[in-house]
Amino acid sequence: MATLALKVDVDTWRGTRDGVPKLAELLERLQVPATFLFSVGPDHTGRALRRVFRRGFLGKVRRTSVVSNYGLTTLLYGTLLPGPRIGERCRDEMRMVRQRGFEVGVHTHDHVKWQDKVSSASIGWTRRELELARDEFQRIFGVAPRVHGAAGWQLNAHVPGLEAALGFEYASDTRGYSPFRPASGGVPQLPTTLPTLDELIGRDDLTSDDPVETLLGMTLNAPRHGHVFTLHAEIEGGAYAPHFARLLLGWRAQGYEFATLGEVYESLDYGSLPTCEIVPGTVSGRSGQLALQAQN
Image (cartoon, rainbow, N blue to C red; front, side):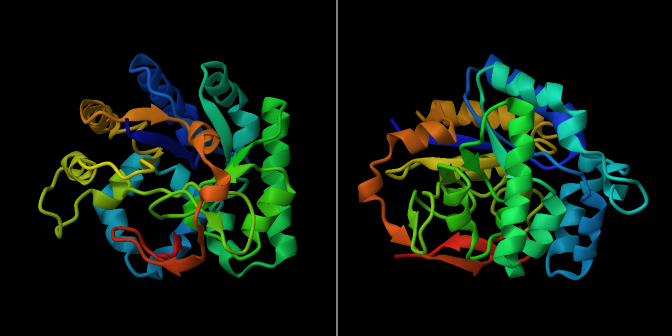
C-alpha cells in the first residue's frame, strides 16, 4: 500500500490559535496521522510584504486571498503592530496536538526572518536561528525536536550539517520526488513531493479550476516511496478545510495509507537512499526560488 505523509506547516499566531485545533479535530475524526511543524518565535508576518517586488508574489496574493486567510491584523505584525510570541501565547494549543497523538517538530523560530535571510546567511547566523527554534520547542514540549522543516523551503549550504549537529534526526526542508541523503552530508531529507493547495488555487494554466481534482489526478499512480504533502494551518485549517477533507477522503479511496514524517523515516533503509544535491529552483504557483532535490 502506498504511503502519503502529511506535513502541517504552522506559520503564524492565528494559524496556531485557530487553524491548528480545527485541523487536529478533522484529522482525529478521520483517523489520519500527521506531523505538525511549529513556528515558535515572534510572528512577523507583516514583514513578508517586503517581497512585493518578487516575481509571482502579487499574483499569489491575489489568487489565494491572503488577507482573508491570514487576517489583516496578522499582516501588520512586525510592522505597525508588535509580533506576538507564538510559543508563549499558544503553548496549550501546541501541547494539545502532541497529547492527541500527532507528531510535532520545528518549522522555524521567526518565519519571515528565516525565509528572507537564510539563503545568504553565514553559518553562525544559521546556527543561532536553529538553536533558538530548538530551545524554544524544548521549553514548550519538554523534549528535543526530531524533525525540522525549513520555512518556505529556504536553505543554505550550512543547514543540513547543522541539523545533524543540533540533534535533529531527519528533515523535510526541500521539494523533490523521494527520500534522499544530502550530498553535502546531514540528516535524511523527506521532500515535499506534491504541489500545495495554495499553489494550485486560481491558476489559469491548469485544466481544472478545482485544486482537489488536480491533486487527485496527480496521485492516481503512486511512486515507490509514496508522497509527502505539505499543508498550512492558515489555509487548510481555515477557509479551505472542506477542500482538505475532500482531499483526504479522495486519497483514502485511492488506497493511500497516511503516515507521519517520523513513520516514513523509521521505514527507510538509510544505506540504500540515493545521495542528491540540493539546488535552487522554482515551483509553479510559488514565488521566488526554493531548495529542490536535484535529479540524479
